[in-house]
Length: 278
Image (tube, rainbow, N blue to C red; front, top):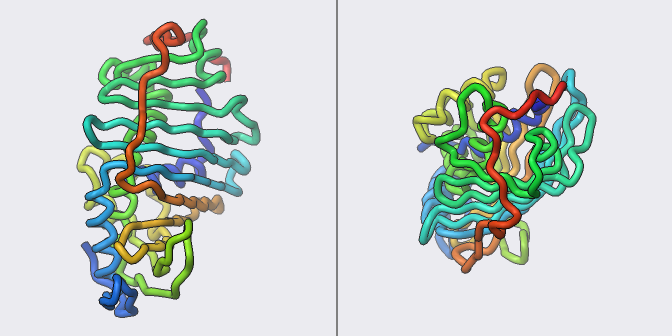
């Protein structure tokens, strides 16, 4: 399986890897003014209380040896009654090529179902969906698959916003309407080394490696009157390549339905698929 372009992987890592001091610019929570750093902390806390949401995502990468790349899609997430995520990627471009048909992944517990024309061809499968247990994926034979699944599986609203709490220069820059909600716009940067310390310890080394060439990541956060993050953007650079990621969040704590695909459409992911020749 081909590797994602460096800037594309960099952007995905910044999004999914996912408390600090800051400038004294203020935002507003209801009628209460908060220092910008405190407002970001409050937003991270509220994000951690969310049990379900949906999000629209766009990641653009430019420059670098592999050329431009883009990922565009949506996510539906729930933490109760069990952890489940449904990720649809309508557009996937890397190495200057489009992935035909995009991809979709459904995570329920420790099981992942993947629908991808490219992966189906690569694995020699006969059914549209492939199923695998995260714990059963071989560390060597399925490393490329596992890397992508780990990134998608670790995506969560709380982790994304928590990265921002390590900022030392965050400030409020105005108010805007996002998704029909009035929000306060905050802007700043967060240091990668410190951000790695606030995420899941099992993912710290992965984040450091993927963002090893980036000292600071620029971010913008739009939080509503309840401190819920309505929009987050992240951007950074690596050896002349850049990434820009935008996530729009909605449907907080609303009922969602995430179900496995029909059994007759599902086959098992081979443990050692034949080389793709790429």
